[in-house]
Length: 336
Image (cartoon, rainbow, N blue to C red; front, side, top):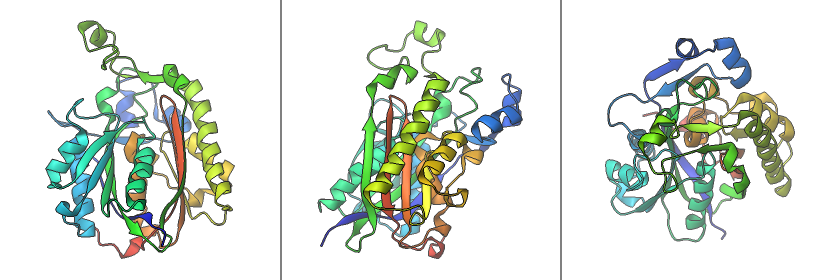
């Protein structure tokens, strides 16, 4: 029988500190009405404290996932961490997370495709399940975006927040799980959305720090236009390839970058707002945590057999869509 990779549990963590639009008004020349009308963001969570990296949130999200699903950490065979903000260049943040939750018999690694990393990692993890290589795989989406945001830059500081979320993948022979994906990259988009320094091309120096080259840089108008078209195109394509009508789709699970991009994707698919997972107003753009965080927030509303379309867009450029059939009734899961 055909094996597919089904999501059998989700876990999530958001930091306690809430950065509101009102607080941002005191930092830069902006206001709540301007932010809400252009992005849909009202507040975002920020990880505070010394020596607190992305792995801190990833560990908490994975621990919740293990607890909720009753999974022995020693039974996990692979952990992939989708992140743009690793704790350090090496070791991998995935290794730090695995060590933090007692996953000792797995191999783990990071995957970075900007905001599309979680989708790329999910599709990659599914191949190990479908091939019969592994039976328990965890994919974590986690980012501490506040670490690379310039809070004097009014265009970017309003957008991003910190969070982590994780899913457990297991084999299914009942037709549930990840059924199709469309993933794309276009490297010519590098100049429009990137981080100028910090890697091997421009290692950290006094000059790069003084010039604020370790923060997010983007040309917003170009990125917005490309994101609207790209996310909408691949979401529509995955529906067409699988003969899905708007009535067949239970939920669109979009990357939470900008509400206007989300609305455009939903319109292209023909699905109404009641079928769109949305939490950007509370968390902002948490990069690779956005999609699994939506799954965690909406878990109680998900039912066995629901058709979900996931869609994301990221810098560089990267984008993609995944079609999956949900494997369990979320309202029957005990919240830990």
